[in-house]
Image (cartoon, one colour):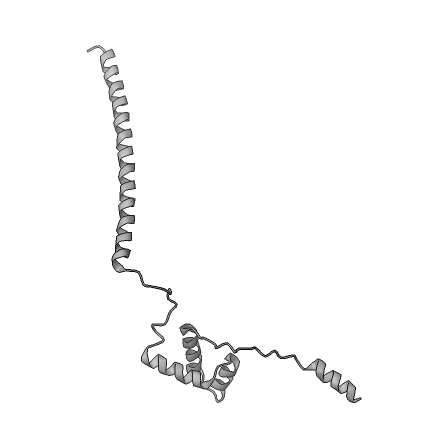
Length: 137
Protein backbone atom coordinates (compact mmCIF):
# COMPACT_ATOMS: atom_id res chain seq x y z
CA UNK A 1 0.00 0.00 0.00
CA UNK A 2 2.89 2.36 0.74
CA UNK A 3 4.41 1.54 -2.62
CA UNK A 4 1.12 2.41 -4.34
CA UNK A 5 1.15 5.81 -2.65
CA UNK A 6 4.75 6.44 -3.70
CA UNK A 7 3.95 5.58 -7.31
CA UNK A 8 0.82 7.73 -7.23
CA UNK A 9 2.75 10.69 -5.80
CA UNK A 10 5.49 10.31 -8.40
CA UNK A 11 2.94 10.17 -11.20
CA UNK A 12 0.92 13.15 -9.97
CA UNK A 13 3.86 15.45 -9.20
CA UNK A 14 5.07 17.35 -12.22
CA UNK A 15 8.72 17.16 -13.02
CA UNK A 16 10.43 20.49 -12.49
CA UNK A 17 13.45 21.42 -14.45
CA UNK A 18 16.00 23.69 -12.87
CA UNK A 19 17.62 26.03 -15.35
CA UNK A 20 21.38 26.34 -14.99
CA UNK A 21 21.29 30.12 -15.15
CA UNK A 22 18.12 32.08 -14.50
CA UNK A 23 17.15 34.49 -17.23
CA UNK A 24 16.18 37.97 -16.18
CA UNK A 25 12.80 39.16 -17.42
CA UNK A 26 12.68 42.33 -19.44
CA UNK A 27 9.49 44.34 -19.82
CA UNK A 28 8.71 46.70 -22.68
CA UNK A 29 7.48 50.22 -22.02
CA UNK A 30 4.11 49.32 -23.58
CA UNK A 31 3.72 46.37 -21.20
CA UNK A 32 4.62 48.49 -18.17
CA UNK A 33 2.15 51.20 -19.16
CA UNK A 34 -0.59 48.62 -19.81
CA UNK A 35 -0.10 47.08 -16.36
CA UNK A 36 -0.08 50.52 -14.72
CA UNK A 37 -3.34 51.42 -16.50
CA UNK A 38 -4.92 48.18 -15.30
CA UNK A 39 -3.71 48.83 -11.74
CA UNK A 40 -5.12 52.36 -11.87
CA UNK A 41 -8.47 50.91 -12.96
CA UNK A 42 -8.56 48.46 -10.02
CA UNK A 43 -11.02 49.58 -7.34
CA UNK A 44 -11.98 46.53 -5.31
CA UNK A 45 -10.12 45.01 -2.39
CA UNK A 46 -7.47 42.54 -3.56
CA UNK A 47 -7.76 43.30 -7.27
CA UNK A 48 -4.22 44.64 -7.55
CA UNK A 49 -2.81 41.53 -5.88
CA UNK A 50 -4.79 39.30 -8.22
CA UNK A 51 -3.53 41.28 -11.20
CA UNK A 52 0.08 40.99 -10.04
CA UNK A 53 -0.28 37.24 -9.47
CA UNK A 54 -1.90 36.77 -12.87
CA UNK A 55 0.91 38.64 -14.62
CA UNK A 56 3.68 37.17 -12.46
CA UNK A 57 4.92 40.62 -11.47
CA UNK A 58 6.18 41.72 -8.06
CA UNK A 59 4.84 44.76 -6.25
CA UNK A 60 8.36 46.22 -6.25
CA UNK A 61 8.21 46.23 -10.06
CA UNK A 62 4.98 48.14 -9.83
CA UNK A 63 6.57 50.71 -7.50
CA UNK A 64 9.55 51.17 -9.83
CA UNK A 65 7.30 51.50 -12.88
CA UNK A 66 5.20 54.15 -11.13
CA UNK A 67 8.34 56.15 -10.38
CA UNK A 68 9.47 55.80 -13.98
CA UNK A 69 6.09 56.98 -15.21
CA UNK A 70 6.16 60.00 -12.91
CA UNK A 71 9.62 60.98 -14.15
CA UNK A 72 8.51 60.50 -17.77
CA UNK A 73 11.00 57.73 -18.44
CA UNK A 74 8.39 55.39 -19.92
CA UNK A 75 7.24 57.93 -22.51
CA UNK A 76 10.53 57.96 -24.36
CA UNK A 77 11.06 54.22 -24.26
CA UNK A 78 10.41 52.68 -27.60
CA UNK A 79 12.23 50.14 -29.70
CA UNK A 80 15.23 51.80 -31.31
CA UNK A 81 17.73 50.63 -33.84
CA UNK A 82 20.97 49.56 -32.32
CA UNK A 83 24.34 50.70 -33.51
CA UNK A 84 25.81 54.04 -34.47
CA UNK A 85 23.40 56.80 -35.31
CA UNK A 86 23.50 58.04 -38.92
CA UNK A 87 25.08 61.42 -39.64
CA UNK A 88 22.31 63.97 -40.38
CA UNK A 89 24.34 65.39 -43.28
CA UNK A 90 24.69 61.93 -44.81
CA UNK A 91 20.94 61.35 -44.47
CA UNK A 92 20.21 64.70 -46.16
CA UNK A 93 22.73 63.94 -48.91
CA UNK A 94 21.11 60.56 -49.59
CA UNK A 95 17.65 62.19 -49.72
CA UNK A 96 18.88 64.83 -52.18
CA UNK A 97 20.52 62.17 -54.37
CA UNK A 98 17.25 60.20 -54.52
CA UNK A 99 15.33 63.36 -55.40
CA UNK A 100 17.91 64.26 -58.06
CA UNK A 101 17.58 60.81 -59.66
CA UNK A 102 13.79 61.06 -59.59
CA UNK A 103 13.88 64.48 -61.28
CA UNK A 104 16.39 63.30 -63.90
CA UNK A 105 14.04 60.42 -64.79
CA UNK A 106 11.09 62.83 -65.11
CA UNK A 107 13.20 65.09 -67.33
CA UNK A 108 14.17 62.14 -69.54
CA UNK A 109 10.50 61.15 -69.90
CA UNK A 110 9.51 64.74 -70.72
CA UNK A 111 12.23 64.95 -73.41
CA UNK A 112 11.00 61.70 -74.99
CA UNK A 113 7.44 63.03 -75.04
CA UNK A 114 8.59 66.30 -76.64
CA UNK A 115 10.51 64.40 -79.34
CA UNK A 116 7.46 62.28 -80.13
CA UNK A 117 5.31 65.42 -80.31
CA UNK A 118 7.80 67.02 -82.72
CA UNK A 119 7.75 63.97 -84.99
CA UNK A 120 3.96 63.85 -84.95
CA UNK A 121 3.81 67.57 -85.73
CA UNK A 122 6.25 67.12 -88.61
CA UNK A 123 4.24 64.23 -90.00
CA UNK A 124 0.98 66.13 -89.70
CA UNK A 125 2.60 69.31 -90.99
CA UNK A 126 3.93 67.47 -94.02
CA UNK A 127 0.55 65.84 -94.59
CA UNK A 128 -1.21 69.19 -94.31
CA UNK A 129 1.23 70.77 -96.76
CA UNK A 130 0.68 67.95 -99.22
CA UNK A 131 -3.09 68.34 -99.05
CA UNK A 132 -2.80 72.09 -99.51
CA UNK A 133 -0.71 71.61 -102.64
CA UNK A 134 -3.15 69.11 -104.14
CA UNK A 135 -6.13 71.44 -103.84
CA UNK A 136 -6.49 74.13 -106.48
CA UNK A 137 -6.57 77.70 -105.23
